Every structure is written in structure tokens, then in C-alpha cells.
Image 1 (cartoon, rainbow, N blue to C red):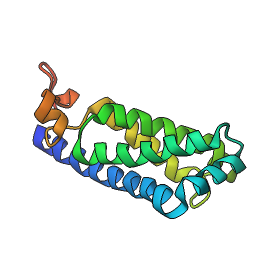
Image 2: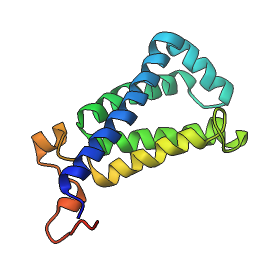
Image 3: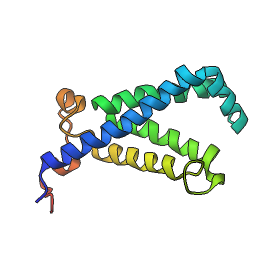
Length: 147
């Protein structure tokens, strides 16, 4: 049987990896490209309101990444980050094929992992669990974890 602790450790590793990726991407947009550079890129993609969208995506990635790292508001952060990856796929990657670096392979992976966190929650090793008693669905009464 797979233990609940193993699931919680897996969720912690997943949150850490994906959270770090989003923190770094938000940091890059804010401090390397700047909001103006990010807005310019979004304007080239044809996105409406590029400055507003640059602010939204930058802070969604930065704060959402920190939320995943700490496990605070994991389901909300995961949903917002999944939505941002859907927009990225449809606006910047879909026409470039599947494979990285330009295709949609990487943002699709981030989208799916974030959706997994939306469904599973943060697990035991998180602020969600400490503050709200959140547990993954597998820890609910009447559910067995199979090997």
C-alpha cells in the first residue's frame, strides 16, 4: 500500500519544483524584461491590454509560485497558473508545434501539473494543512490508497 506520507512527500516535491519555476519566470518578467518589455511582447502576440496583462501574468507567476512553494492557497494558485498556461499555449505556442523550446510541450506540462494540484490540494506539508487542515482527497474517510 502507498502511504499517505508518500503522497504528501510527492505533493511537496511537485509544489516545490513547479513553484520555483513560476517564481523564476515572474522574477524574470519583473526584473529582467521589466513590465514594459513584457507588455511589449504581449502586444506583439496581439493580446488585448498588454500592460494590464503583463502586470497580471507577472504577479500571478511570482505570487502563485510563492503560494505553491509554501502550500498556501494551493488550489487557487494552481487554477490561476493553469489558466495562465492555457493563455500562453493558445497565444504563443500552439502554432509552433509540440516540442520545446518554442512549442507547447512545456507550458502544457505546467498546465497539467497545476491542474493536478487543484484536484489534490497541497498535502500535509503545507500552510494549507497547518491553517485549514487541508488533506489530499486520498486521506478522506472511506478511501483506500492502493499499491
